[in-house]
Image (cartoon, rainbow, N blue to C red; front, side, top):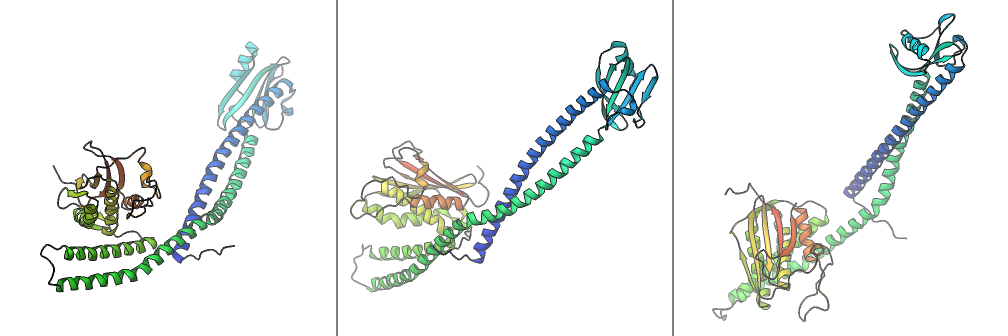
Length: 416
């Protein structure tokens, strides 16, 4: 049996917070269900009380002999040869003599609702053995029964909601903990791997700087030699890789990115310059177009990773040309990378899922293997910055594909 992964205090806090949220949601759901069930129960019981009361007063009106024989919970009035007789406790405003006289004349039974100071009462008036009998139902008994039912429902429901909340919290903690442990293990792996890579990168940067010094001291280079530029590019790539490792360490700590105002055009230019050697090796023209300055509120390292992944993807598919377009579109900054490759076949949504590479077979000789992670990282960067990334055909209608990254621009949109 594997030992559980120890969690930091911050991870423990998030686990408790998630468990409490699940417990509260469970309690709220149970409360809604109990409320609906209670309302149905109260409605059914109340309807049953009404029907039962109507049957009881009708039976009493046809069988009663004397007002003093009135069943519990009823008032009786009898109008016959001996005059009008009423129950001693009959409320003020009863009996309804007009209804009794009408029934006496017509001989038709009447079921009515009578408004008195005590409320609305149900009455049944009928002819029985030469007399007019009016029986009124006392609602007090039904009211007390309903109050007892509602009290029982509230108490039982309250206890049920509390138990559901506690149980939901406990079960939620047990259910979420494996996921939290897996994420913690993943973050620690990323942090450890990034930390261990910093030392060889530092050595690589040092060697590149030494190489740069030797190149500068070398006087035998031809005037058209690109060696100094290539060494400068190597240093720049080393710095970029170090920045990426720092960004991975921050991501492993689950801390949000530090957003600053960054010129996306500068990032695009740097990315194009870094990829130019790869493009030339594949005989692909790589160019950047658009304004010289477009500012967005982003993390510079994260966005450079995303733009680099988009350019790498385009270079992998292009046959002769890759274009990087940076522009302002309302409240957003758009980075669109176009290629003249075969385009996108089928649905484009799965392009941004991990391990969703559509390449089949072994990679060409000398080329690296692709794992379908580049565009997934682009999607993560876009989501992290509240933006989006989409894939589709080129807007000019030519053959190829266009991948568009949208980020939140800095400042208000320019007026036209």
